[in-house]
Image 1 (cartoon, rainbow, N blue to C red):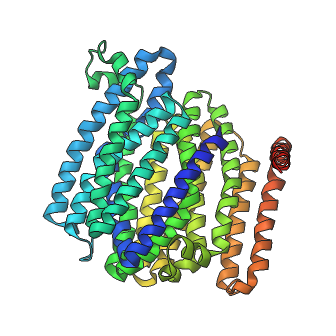
Image 2 (image 1 turned 45 degrees about the vertical axis):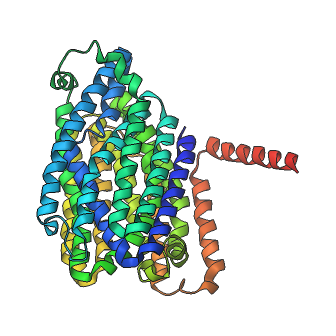
Length: 490
């Protein structure tokens, strides 16, 4: 199932690559810096105004699935109504702030006010898209959820690019707004039967229905508080870059930040659609811990395979996915890649902590990571620029991963998983080695292609060595089947 979800997510990855390339060529570093700042603003608005309800289906619906379709439809209907009310009110408030003074939310005179308004208006539609994706994953299935994500990404890419080509940054967000309407209507139509089933018989209020679910209020409250921290910390980093170093530096930051997040996006979506419903269904803490460590081990191996290539060939990655105008950011790509990988691993442990209602620690770890990110960025970015942002992300992500893993082990009484630890340590060593070789000048020139290729093969060999015997056998059998089909076609 992980392979199936990952394969579909690969299509989303390709669409993201196409989007990055098209907008980099069309808008240049200045435009990309502005768009990335506005995108972070939209994410902040979504998180703040949705009160965590976009994530609630993955927690609530698996826990009532054994009660029948009526219970599922009631939970879905209550969550949907609550989300629409919350995101509508929250967005109106933040839109008023944006219209009164865009500098209150986004620093920098380069950011156009009409683009800020259009971006904020589209936030409720993005929240609905995230919500429908979560509901689809736990009702219809992972494949349907991923098809919906692919369709949403394709429609958004097409309409936003047309808008940007016609009217610049404001046109980009006008096209995104239209895409949001189309995708939201499609999601509501796909899930219409789920709500219709219980709509006629469910006479309880939305509030009464939500109160039925144990610890849901604490979960939503925690999610809401975190909505102010992590997106705000990201927005603060970008705002400091725009204010102290200029929008061009923010564009360079966006290049390495986006490339670093490409492969982790694959794994994050897989965890959200596959691992999160699974761990929420499980009720035994030790079994949850075992599932988590095994998932981290597999994810670490996949991250080595996906993260080492762009770190080894940063110039090529920047040219392919953006343009040569973004090359000043290439030397720091490995640090952002490593930070993103640590974030993915830490998020898996945090998901499990939330699943077993350890909300206080989950909130504390996430909040602490955001505070460290913001504080280090505030100290280092004005003077160091992009390297300062890299240090901020690395320090906060490493802290979150270590504390979350230790807390899960203590809370469940499970022993430390050496298999997961070795996999994560191997990931860190691979990317750190690439960074050291890059900064010392060993990998500065295209003539070093054989050495880079050799390092990549060594990393892949290390992954194979850490696999279980049955996993290596599955790879051999899969390769043999593929080779046999290829020979028959010949």
